Image (cartoon, rainbow, N blue to C red):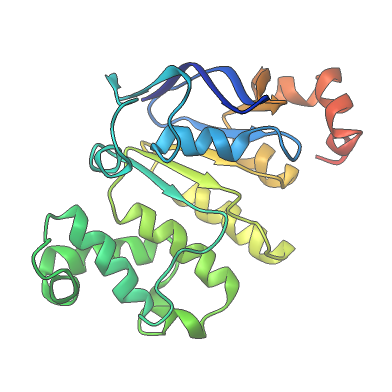
Length: 247
């Protein structure tokens, strides 16, 4: 469903990603781990088209999308939630979801009006709100809800675009243990045919949700395998200085 072949990117003398090759099957849930500066977010930026790789290719559902824009990739089913919130604080939770759903359903001419009145848009909003547990907050302004609810809304906005593949950049960043557990449950409740690629720093969440784990270090893939194989990897224990012992 999503594949990279020898993806490489340098900024001056700094090699941020080096020959990264990944292949995710439909419905696979893969977690990307790695220390700070390993190239994880830069890899995501190349996948969605925000950064052009120096070398290599990106394929989505078998199509080479390397030269396509962010918008063109999104229309083909590649969506992303960010580490930092990118929401419209002055609008309600429902309106934020509605704007994303309006684009998905092709309502471009009066997007704000369409997001509030179109039946197909409202059906999508309700479905997504139930998936990410936002029904109690639909009519609340984003500026008035908690940080954890905003993180849920980020996922909801991405889901409202009806993606084939969803990239999630540290969905539990900045939330407490209870909210992290809530995200674990949320991810497990998402449709199993949705392909997920997740950057995560929370070891417990990573091992709980992943079908497979990829580890980057200095921009290179140093491990690619199952959570069970990751637990037994001495290389990964060295990289994380024992953090795996408690995972």
